[in-house]
Amino acid sequence: MVASQTAMALQHKTFLYGTLKRGQPNHHHITDSRNGTGRFLCDGRTKERYPLVIAGRSNLPFRLNKQGHGQHIKGEIWEIDAKMLKFLDLFEDSPRFYQRLSRVICQEDGREVEAQVYLLSNFKESLLELPCMAVYESEGAHNLPYRVIPLHTGEEGATKMKNEVIRTTENDKK
Image (cartoon, rainbow, N blue to C red; front, side):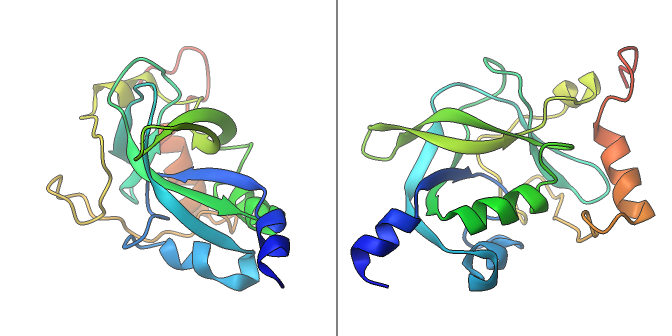
């Protein structure tokens, strides 16, 4: 594929802030051509503040859809094709678990760009009591390394993990 065709195929921008970033445990998924095509553009950060917390039995990073709380989250802006976007929707179990939404991301040169991000909207309010971070690293000072638990196989462990962080009723505040 020539360069112009590649650029046309990479029509979607996405913002990675967790285990899919370079150097993190699930990064291999974003570079696996069987999942689609992706290209790193630059580092960036959210224009608005959001809570980024680590929770659940897998010690997953969750970006909570609570704009104005937390910190400006640092991550990576990638250009991806439609096949990779479809893979990411499956990987993030969107829209059932995470919601894929368009948000403004500030590139490292100061320019702003719209990018797709995965946010947890239906979360337990108790997650807002956890420490919020600006940067996720699996082996960070938080001492909560990511643990692999199959999320998308319908296994009991994945269901239990999701139930630890999502709100199941309006009265579920824990």
